[in-house]
Length: 631
Image (cartoon, rainbow, N blue to C red; front, side, top):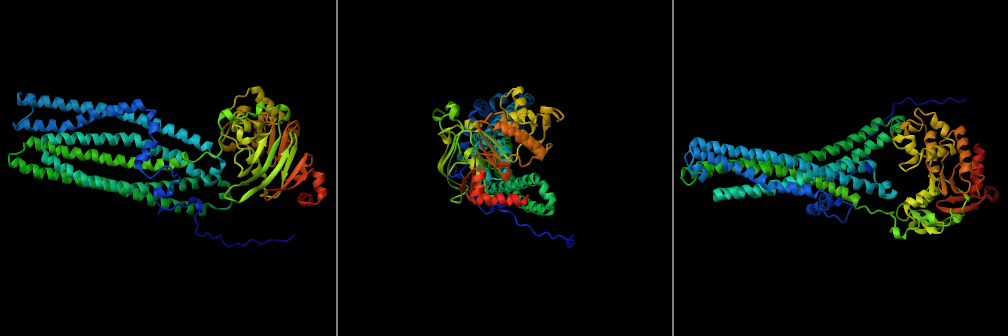
């Protein structure tokens, strides 16, 4: 026996290059990154996208907007009250109902009025805050539901090109950001704008020259805020794209943890992760810079405004053209005028994040549903077809390509008779699984059509078609939940029907050996079961639906010899009086089928029984001889 020496040289880790899946072009603008041509890069158009969701909370919106007037007035009148109190102390001109009172009585009255406005404002602010949060949460829930429904309705082709991590980011982070558009954004901005307008009105009633000066100062501030928010918007979009790539990488590594550890990819993948993380931090730093720039600008302008009021107002007080109380009121107005503007900028930042989320979510909501049912009035349920002819499948010159004109199915034209047992064989990439996906209408044929019992499958509702077909894949996917729920999959079946399905597939004994039997809780993807046990549950899941056509895609490949014998016995009984399509790589398991279709590069090369194909000396004969030599 030869000895093989394994080199003891250390493994070298090369600097990783990011796969295209995780690459995002940080130089593109948000508009260039959008996949949807329907939704332009315009804030108001984006906001209109949310109007249908807002209408569902119409009463709460009316209440929130109704509170704006008393809130704005109670806030704007406070500087006037304080100014009147100072004027009363200095024996200057005051309101008529205050001027006739003594110093103490006048100050007590003004204090009570001021306290009243504070209490009213606190009470109304609490109501509005709760109402706005309710609106935001309701809209967030509605959008998340619609987004989830949309995602689960999209064709498999969409998931072929979209990383799971990106979808998760849009269903979680982006939807949460959308809620901020309403909880801290849109209504708050309208409230702040209304407060600014009310304060400007009261300032002009006091002294129009100083009021004009403060109003002029708002113009450059508004221009700077708009500029910084525009830059924030672009950086925020890129940051969310990088976050999607980050989540995609985490999801991929968690799902493939076995391969990561077995092939010592920990350091390599950690370096990949750090690369994406650094790009994400870079974009977040940009958003923080622009956000901070807005706050710093407003802080500086507000101080300049107060200084301007003190200088000009002081000159007017010295010139006896302005009361000291009025000057005090204007100083408070200068402070309060820029406070809503500062809040406005902060909320506008939240809205910009929300608009970024709308753009990204709209990519999915605008994604066309490639495979959908026709109008129910034109549907042709298979249960209405004569049961004596059920089970016929016909492919009429079917062509199919996953991408462009790279055809994986080429001009397939065959008929499977009712009750016939057909096997699909051929080398890897021959198109066997693609035929099953087309039959189940997970993809649409590029050309040609597929008929079941003489009816084009496009005229059959998807629910009806998939009840008609029982598909058992090589990898039996299980959901978190108990065994019974994984057999029924949310449909109504009695305990007797579940038990009968398990007994007919010879897996009842295995289920009874589980800790709680049919109520045994399964972890995510059934990780507390073996591959064979998961596949057995998948068999029962299909049998309980009593399909007319049974499709087996290497369904027994993960079973051990003893379990496979039990399942094979069940299958022999199950496929009686049913049409069966079997994909198998072990040719010895399909010797008893009625016909064998031999495929190569998407074309049907040979068709016949096992004996006929072996005697013909074609591709099937070569494959069979190779497998016999291997045994």
